[in-house]
Length: 260
Ligand SMILES: C[S@@+](CC[C@H](N)C(=O)[O-])C[C@H]1O[C@@H](n2cnc3c(N)ncnc32)[C@H](O)[C@@H]1O
Image (tube, rainbow, N blue to C red):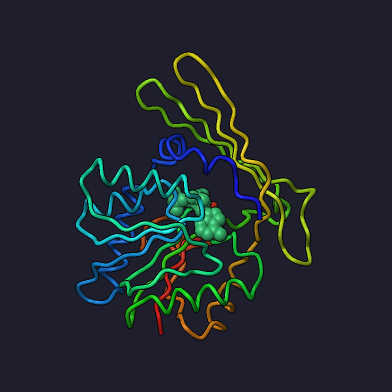
């Protein structure tokens, strides 16, 4: 797997992806309240990126640990935590073979990061590695893209922009349908940042990354087959009252798992 070039630019990532962070953190707290181990306080952010959830939850007094494959992201989170005078633990780690130690009340893996697990074996091994790090009854929350329509598999484009001070980051998420491999259910997708800053525009092309298409029914089977989690629910928004349905406007399915 080639790591997207955009993950070497945590500062722009943090701006481009800052939308909805409070809502997503509220969702984590709702899940803990509804399903979590009583008094849950220790959380693990897998693929934490620029730390948008990790830093917000640290502010909400959770004890936060984050891992990510990108050293640039990890350095940025450490720096931001120091600037905000929060004590957090972060390290470079790979979600395909987690080496982190410790016990957590819940873990989460947000913004489609789960689709970097390309095979059923990788997904199953990942579930087992995460479950090992969770306290009894610990939760695992994750989301991933699912096609809205069968004829759109591997051809959706999503874009949005965020502005702060004099900087605008426009994010393009592109899929390349000609790269679909129907046997492995993988295809190449790409992130592109268009950054406007100080009157100049630069484009940062992430480069193509092969990712997995995971469908809701097979996900349920993979969870069951892992033997370590039960699937408590799937949601179309970061809202426990919004189930994932075929007419959902969401482009991501958000799943709530609990350790058996
Ligand atoms: C789309 S970002 C999501 C970041 C964060 N979870 C969020 O919601 O903003 C994907 C992140 O996953 C990281 N990543 C990619 N492959 C990974 C792997 N194999 N193990 C751990 N992190 C990985 C990238 O460096 C990037 O920070």
